[in-house]
Image (cartoon, rainbow, N blue to C red):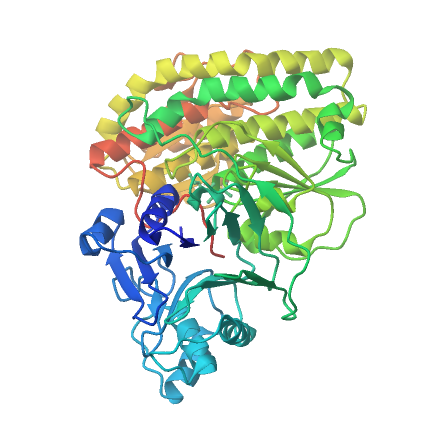
Length: 604
Ligand code: M6R
């Protein structure tokens, strides 16, 4: 999704900016651009492209770009289509002020009307452009020759942001000032310090490898990256004690498909090993709540689980384990729908987010002040920094937009937490706990077997069903979150309409959708006999039943446990991932980068 990179140093800025943008690419975007500021009074040069980095490279000057200050952006369209005119950086009327922005402005329409009435000429549909004009109005009059002082730009950015409503991480560069000015509100922004340069990025991944220290802007901070750096708090006062710094993480391994046709294929394949790694880190710590105690967390009776999308389905599995094993009625909050609830003492909030950057999750967390645990694949993320404790998924980078191994590891992490809590509260005998530990230990092998067993049949099925426009995905009990997750994979990758619901709900309305040949993907789960009854009801109306499960009648076989574990038929999701991916390939769509979507959803 939207990503910011800024550079101010002694070397040309462009290579570091482009490298940063390329590291942020996997998050998903639809247009991109850079602004290079020579800092000597010559114009700020802006290059933008609709499309990805190769399209930007095509409009960049071939050589001779020596500006040592610049800002850059990848955009995921919110206000306005993904066109060149709407790509960042945006400039003011005179091209003096260039701005890149993550976040969204709630008062864009009102501001646009005000600025237009004041004579500003708007040239895009994008809220960000309004910031450039607002800064312009607070800076004027600026002559093109003599540039403004850093103090003047800080004051102008402060005055402009005071007028905004919404969320923003901003990087601003102004003709005649060899500096970048940063501001943030409800959208993360980091400063990365190297020996002879300073960068800013919305994500640590955007930094050059030579960055050694990372500091985060606090809410309302305004920072100058220039000859003399300056750091100001939301009241405009200079921050004399530096914001806490931390060593930069070693650069992530370059994206590698490991010989697979696409990242999604590799990441489906990674799941048994990823699960094994996660289980090894948690399994010895289930008894008497050690997993929670080690994280410094309470072991109380109230749990709130917060997440979006696939992560919310992993949260649903966790809630079910908490209910059935620990007797705890956990609440699952879909982050984008969160509202403040009556404060219950001793509640533990657990946020599931593979990226740790999901804006809906971060915004939802503003509603509560309970101890917070992040279950995330990104221990450097904004969510992790905000949390009291972090349980890392440790499944390695996931580049495909579709969650695969991060989903299965979230299920396992959530289940381990639930089992550990149940043990802490005395709801599990030693024998029962050992039984669950055994079941957990068997998961990687069953995943590997399912991977082998299901890939071929899923491919055949995809060939037969790919052209079908609509599907029903269903299950019962512990299988329901997996039916929903499988349905989400088919929607987001293959662009097929899918109705996902618990099988018992069909007769309450959606059964009317079934006609001769309607494909119904039935994820087998206990109680099998009840599910079989629902299957017969659908078949009687012409549905084409496709069974995903361990039984002999399965269309896509799954290596399931003899006794269903409290987290249900997790392995079935591998078969569903194969089916979605094969359908997508058959239709000729991009498996790793589905249309309209982003890996990190950094807008609310
Ligand atoms: O990074 P998160 O886990 O917070 O992302 C939440 C959803 O956007 C995400 O799970 C999404 O639904 C999946 N990528 C779909 O495969």
